Length: 409
Image 1: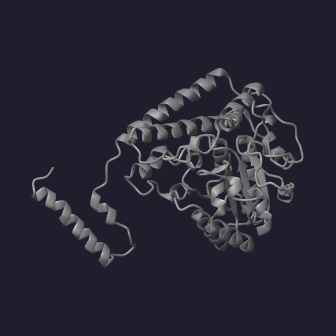
Image 2 (image 1 turned 60 degrees about the horizontal axis):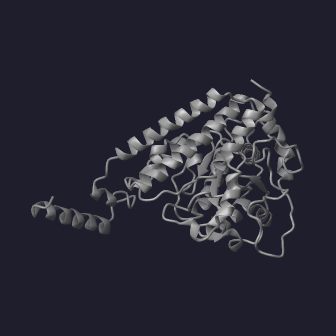
Image 3 (image 1 turned 135 degrees about the horizontal axis):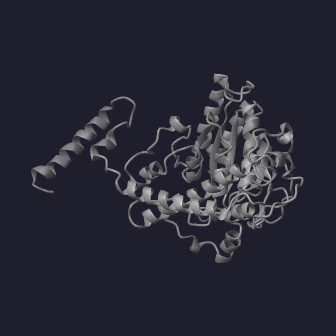
């Protein structure tokens, strides 16, 4: 094992991190801005080639978290990045081959999701949007379960309370209110600020930059602030809200907007898994301790389409994608590990082999998913029996039976 002081994963976070999460920047007169440069206020620990950056004002509050990580920690994080990307690629391929109705890819955002997901403790609760496949992986949700909804055979496929990972939320921004309410419930249950690290809990809610324009998102900020709720809002700023650049969504970066609601905001390099982990850990530690909410803006990029029904070549230029390709989170993490001697070639080969096995299992089990009986679409529409739903079910059953009676196959 080489020097363990160059990677991330410390069990503790600086108490003063909360007081340094605001990094002020001037707002340019033009609404347009450089979407490839996060600015000097962005927390970052490795560059695009994996070179360890010197400690500076932006990353100093989180440096100890990074320095305490071991080679084993680095290997586990790299493995997550590779397997999550392979799982995502398989989902995309399955949709293109007609096995899924839709797939929202996370290509390019693996570090943002793995770094945040690994900062959560078992007792914490995560509220995703619909692209958080990497967070689901970190919470122990079987990737095959993610495919059920997009295949149209279930409504989510997992028990959210088994992994403290809520079902996907398609209504953009709605999960932020759910998360805030759940966090306020944690306060009332007495599991916040007790000083017991095995008991204190908090919530992390995920959305994209487009979600910040939703009313639900902003209402959640208000409630979280005035209630001092133990919730971390994690905004993956991937630069595009479907086909709209984010300068049409807001005039100042999402992390700066947190100040208007009365709590800290911080921008982190969303393609640097070490930085994302460190910032997320500090924010979650503060929330569990009863210090209230934090907004994290992960400055990243959506390398693929918004979903498989989208064509990004219609609204963005190839040179922009090329710039971000050089910031690839897996490439830079591998470069960092090779430079510091945190893994040998055999490790990287083993991870690739494991990724192949995972992809084969996902494909096989996806294709083996049984189709539900059509009549089950009427089940659980309401908690209690409902006369209108009952009547519709009977009508549907009779309609289906008419085909059998008529000799149709």
